[in-house]
Image (cartoon, rainbow, N blue to C red; front, top):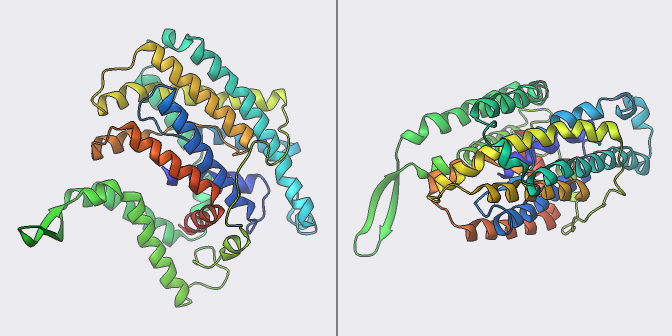
Length: 367
């Protein structure tokens, strides 16, 4: 879940014309984590009340990048940016963030209306897997160029990450791992299990590749300043405060233009179509009956409110239901709302501790 959230600012911040070592990059990550915890708590408490984890989504990245690619929002030449003062560089990206914030918040009204207005119930018979699969696929394929650009910083690290993640998710989950444990009355004995890899495929991949990058850094196998060095962005951690509470309008008052709002509607529609499929699937994973129509309507409405909050808080993204969490429920067999609500509290706390956002940014920047 954290991985999906943190990956979004890596694509978003360069388009906002932010400096590579700007500590505000970690502020955006912390804001997204904070809003994720807040909105997920609302969804599990007053929304559909299923274990639906809400958070940033790539569905909003496509219209976001399209808006920022307009002539008036394109970044100035690097020579001009290098001559700007710190205040001018800050205003350069904040004015773009305010434009995105206003467009996201206003376009989310559509999702609020169709949700609380009960319109979703009439559309359920038309929204099937045949419409959801191509929608999600097209969103992912449209970001292929951005993924290739990030991987080109070091193709060896990128290829190693992909191979290792594939091995963990497709091969290692079928290989029991021996582990020595102690049980009262039985003493030490060896058990074999594969649940660690099943539950921590992405985390294990990140840890292993981070260790490899650290070794390459210590041995100076990578030149100083190389993006794959583990010490390339330490300045962000040093410049980030320990505590910083995200708040609405933290980058200034959001601005609203008709063109940006219409563009963001594409992301809202995609999120709505995608989220509808997760409601009955999550209920089935939890062993609960299919949610009634009014619960789905309420869930979509709360998701729209969450997107409005994400826009007003200045995360640069909306919210959507995480499909990864649905699979996690099936693997862990944990179907308690209390678990998710306590996780929400931890995410809100992580969003307040700004150093967490800086660490997450550095780790994911390398890998």
